[in-house]
Amino acid sequence: MIKSVVIVGGGTAGWMSATYLKAAFGDRLRVTLVESQRVNRIGVGEATFSTVRHFFDYLGLREQDWMPHCSASYKLAIRFQDWRAKGHHFYHPFERLRVADGFNLAEWWLADRGEDFDRSCYITPHLCEAERAPRLLDGSMFAANLDGSLGRSTLAEQRAQFPYAYHFDADLLAGFLARYGVERGVQHVVDDVVEVVQDQRGWISGVRTKEQGLVEGDLFVDCTGFRGLLINQTLREQFESFTDVLPNDRAVALRVPQDMAATGMRPYTTATAMDAGWIWNIPLFNRVGTGYVYAEEFCSPEEAERTLRQVAAPGRDDLEANHIRMRIGRNRRSWVNNCVAVGLSSGFVEPLESTGIFFIQHAIEQLVRHFPDERWDPALVADYNNRVAHVIDGVKEFLVLHYRAAARDDTPYWKEAKVRKIPDGLAERLELATSHLLDEETIYPYYHGFEMYSWNTMLLGLGWQPERAKPALAHLDPAAARREFAQLRADAEQLVAALPSCREYLATIH
Image 1 (spheres, rainbow, N blue to C red):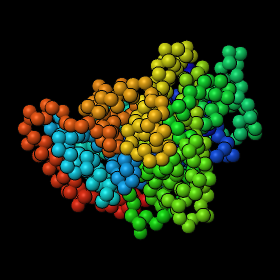
Image 2: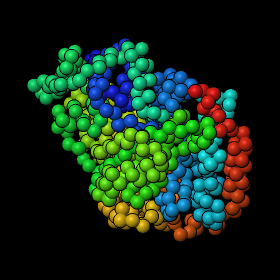
Image 3: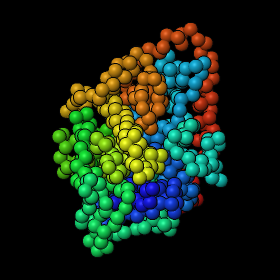
Image 4: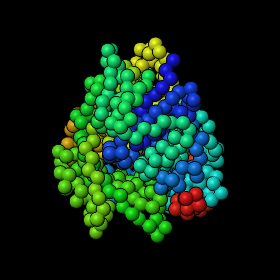
């Protein structure tokens, strides 16, 4: 029986792994986390998927338990600014499309293309522009059928689309989870790892620390970030780069203080297209997290920092810039021998769709589902590796779609995006999308976190649209669709009137 797990590396990946394993297995598993105080954290994973609620529910944490400790706020959508043309924007929400007579509203919208697609087909853009919270002041959620805790649920049990995610300070979340984990029995070793010890088979038997000596275990989890201390440096697992299809390899980030009570708080992430990449804007409770993700081939770090300061923090030259060289891609295998890589040490794509925390959550859930015994069943390990690879590869394909389908072609960077190599399968999907919208049969076929509505939202928002609606709609009475569009507008107006502002609600739990 596997009795002990040693996690090397802290940060969000390390402490999410430690607390989740402890919640899953309790005292039947000894969990030790080793981290150095001298290792800098990346700390840019401040926006999330709506599925992250399963993680907090699994730990038994309510929003009021953790959000005030992490400067957390709500995220209803991503606003894509200037991707189609300068001045144009659209929202990618956490909201499935309504259906009328067997065709979703996006299909019906193509028949007349009146108001902007996202505002016609979704409630969320209206809430975003009114800066509304997803909860009433009494704490109840606007989608009452989705309210309440899911208990010890996982991604596999996600049936309905939860309507929001979170923004938070990743460093503060790691600190909160560290305290939470230690209180529940996680052994915390603060020390520098000076040697990774292997047995005669090449498996890891322990990590030697500078002050506290050898820390032994049965299973090791590598949360050492882009270094991949265990999985890459020690076990020499091959890393497969995605830079042939995703050119962005650098980022520069700023933390900008802001009085949200005075300025208001946007309940969404903004991704603004720039000459050589894009800038994120993430409103937290008391500051804004912002950064420029770019391709060094088209922009120097100095130019990127200068641009970011001009856009996001003019006159604030005192703010420290954090320059990050991103390792884009994934390991060929994330589980090798008795070592499992989680987080940046496993794989990473640029944070355009806030997938970093999602990758961590998916990996640790799958680790619990595939947890080994002393036989180290190769079939379990292979299945784990396939699932992790599919998730990362699916997100890679979805992100390449953003660049290939965007109507922007006004700089060398955006021109290159139209001719760069494309992943297998995506070219066929894009060709289909010139004729008709995609469905669950024609998007990336393995679980990767994104549903059909997300693929079509991005295609329609970016300007990659079929020339006409499906011919079948001409033979149907549009009355039911018109009623659904009208009901959606009425629901949006009612919610905008009833819900408090995002800042107003968060003030009640902060």
